[in-house]
Image (tube, rainbow over all chains, first blue to last red; front, side):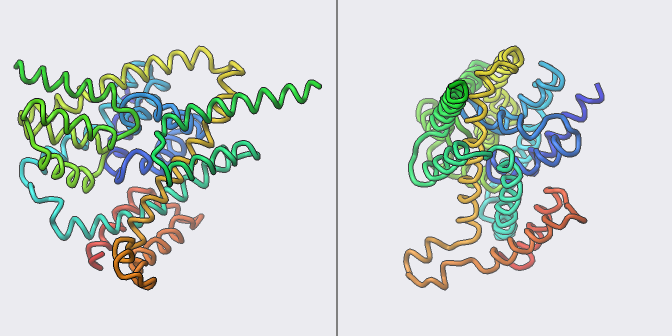
Length: 182
Length: 190
């Protein structure tokens, strides 16, 4: 029971301070659920992100569901999911009810411009940590570069890229083993 | 009651078919507004602005806003809950399958390819945020003056945050970093 509470509040903290989409959640996830509680490993986190790209729904929510399920099965999945969406529901309801012009407020804009500068640094820190574990040889470096270029300069869906990358990884490993047997 | 059920159904559908994050829900929202008349496309534009200037996953923010605008507090609960229900079910099923085949060589080989792809997607997203936060690309496109391309305040703050976060002794929590950045943004009118 105590762990379910921890799960809820940990994901509520993550949901309440994620600015700029699911990927911006990464630094927070690393800190809270990998470093602080040790609920999942960095490798598992990457797997969840990748799978979350090709399944329906929002990546942030999908990742929360994965972590919750790993810890406490279905109750954990539900609690983590509710945790990550709870702050949004409260904050947006308050804004919609009382602050229709919220997005136009100068103070909000200034705060957000500051937050964005911080978020790109946080993402950079988080992703260099991940890359050390995921980009380990020529094949994985190639996959990573192709994905960055495709996402920056084309509108290929991330889901397609992830599926192709999975296929490429499988083929590369198999060819490698065949070479080894010869 | 009938309309609430319809709201739940519409968001369930969106959650089931919108693959790949908050922006993927947009086409569904436009279609929903047109079909039901609950909100207009101008409302959707307002919702995007608000969802982008509040914490939390954008898709959830939009669902809450639409739900509240159309049906009050009950709608604000029903919208996001219906939106996450499909992915909750799908992810639980996938987790069960993964647990069964975790040790299989095929799954491990596939993950060997998935992990760098996942890393690449995050790098691209980070570059996207950096372009908005650190550059004035729209100003540069008009003036063609290279000195106007850079957001000096933003870059200065980013460098400061980089030094702070990579200091082995301090290791501040990301939440603290975000709060500091917001406060500095307000004080120095970013």
